[in-house]
Structures are given as C-alpha cells and as structure tokens.
Length: 159
Image (cartoon, rainbow, N blue to C red; front, side, top):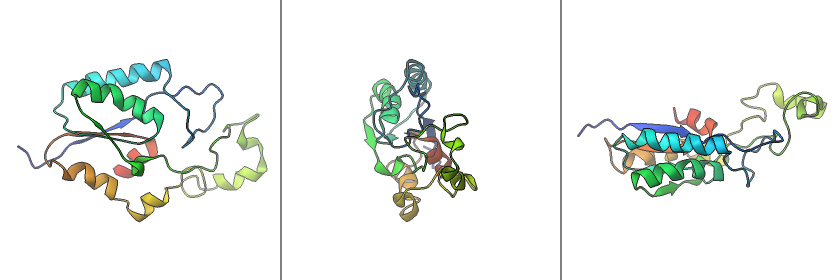
C-alpha cells in the first residue's frame, strides 16, 4: 500500500434556482434534475476507484450529491460542519444587473475586493481551524483514496 493519500474533491451538482438567488447557506436549495444526473455520474466515476471514506458538507445540495456515491460504494457519509459554504453578503439576494443587487449602490462596497469584502468570506471555523477539515480526511486511513463533497470555495480552500 502506498503512503500517498488521494483526496478526490467533488463539488455539488447543479442546484434548482429559478430566481437566481445567491443561496449560500440558505436551507431548501436542492439539486435540479440535471444536478441529480451529475451526482449519478459522480457515483459511476468513483465506482471504479478504491475510495474508503466520504466527507460532506451539511448543506442539502452537497448531501444530495454525495448520496448516490455513498450508495454505490457502500460507504456512510461523514457530515462535517467545517465543510459548509463561506458566508456571503449577497446571500438571499439576486446578484446581477437590472433588478439584481448590483443595481443598488449600498452593495457596491462589497465588490471592491470580492475575496475579502463580502462575496466570499470564510467562516469562523475556517479561520480558527483551517487545516482541521483537510487533515481529518487523511488521518483515518493514510494511503487510501477518499472523497470530499462540498462547495466551490471549500474545495479551493482545500487545495
């Protein structure tokens, strides 16, 4: 067995969001029909790999993406709060020109530096323990592949 551990990063599938809301951490945003097909395709992909664990964000869309993978591989999903979406000033708002938040000057200050000013803000847990969620996925069984499903910004933070 190799000492190298492979961690596969899996972003959630497409979300049903007909009104274009920045949903962030809001509950009730589930996978669309296309997103469910994406989750099944992920399950097919991982079926050919010797994955030994599956860590997932608590958000519905991530859980729904991980579920077919877990079923296909016979694994339990390990839900980890530290894998949750970063906070976002625009959460619950539409984001765009026209009727979106970009039309309103009170939001403009959050766009000066989108990485620091409101578009994506790491949660307190990410700042206190930035490596906890990353390292824990590797410690259990070093040298064995595992999957981590979550949000785009968490996958960037992992890398």
